[in-house]
Image (cartoon, rainbow, N blue to C red):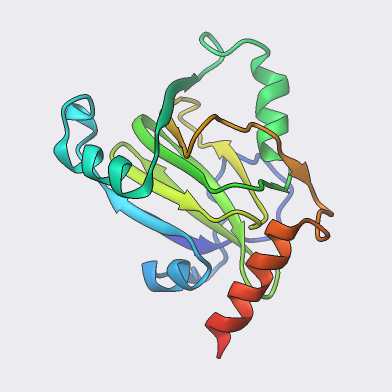
Amino acid sequence: MVEAWYMDESQEDQRAPHRLQPNRAVSLEQLRRLGVAYRRLDADNYETDPRLKEIREAENYSWMDIVTIHKDKLPNYEEKIKTFYEEHLHLDDEIRYILDGSGYFDVRDKDDKWIRISMEKGDMITLPAGIYHRFTLDENNYVKAMRLFVGEPVWTAYNRPADDFPARKQYMKFLAEEAQ
């Protein structure tokens, strides 16, 4: 089951949990108010899982692939890990389904504070277009994830600052409406 918390400001190893002391947990409802959607699925049977099929059809996730992030599996591993951890946004939703291993998605809250979302096997997350975020492995240094897209995949990340993009403006409007 997913767990999320506010992060400390340490610049040490990005793969460490970085929990505030005392811990400030973040609920699924708090994530939902940021536009982050979470589902728990059966990763052992993802190829035949009727629930995954339903989600893909309902959300129009017509394209998918599987990526393994590990030093022995991913070309240019060190460079990619640094790139994933740079704060950025996308113009489309980012959908990831963890099939094996674990890692962290960090998202900014409405006050620009980092929230760390611990993802493990069976967790599916949807980050809305326009949300500032980043990804890193945890201390296990391995994750296998399904990437899902509506239509052809768009891999472009826009590093912060990227506030002038329509997707960012739409996201900020969403946050303002959620606050009312």
